[in-house]
Length: 226
Image (cartoon, rainbow, N blue to C red; front, side):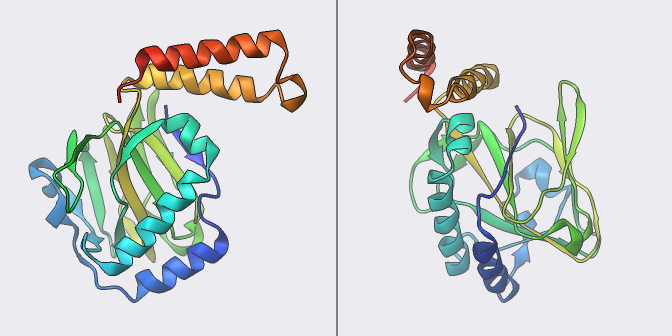
């Protein structure tokens, strides 16, 4: 499942983040890439121990806690603290697949990367190129969202970032381990959850809604890994 999640950050939060990021010190993005990724990765990143990265990462995680669509789609168990990248002057990231296991900085805890997240902090009008291209069963999809919006997609997907030929593309990116390992099962639960919500509060106690809610939670209980 590839899902766009609108309005994760407010315009005021985006503007504040841009001020901090524009003044930050960026380093070569290959520092955090694996062996294969380093060969095709050409961008800049904030160091993971950057105070700006830590402050903005906490703000993004707090915003996601208040975003029901994200919770319904991702069913997150563990989330890697967000990192930040910048593409300009032709920089790009060639076709690659994300590493399967990541260690949470400053801890001995590791997580399995089930879902990848890119939160756009630059508006599309600020730069040319820079589309995120994700390959799935039905072919390649290109993504270029507004500032404050996020794309969620399976970490098993081959993907790339096209060259930025004008301006700068600034994003947050991170991974998460879901309670539901398999994408097909997550998608099924998400569709069921959304369908139940569409009945609305006036039908919340209808026997069919109660029964469907029971089916949702029993499937979640059966499939969840904690």
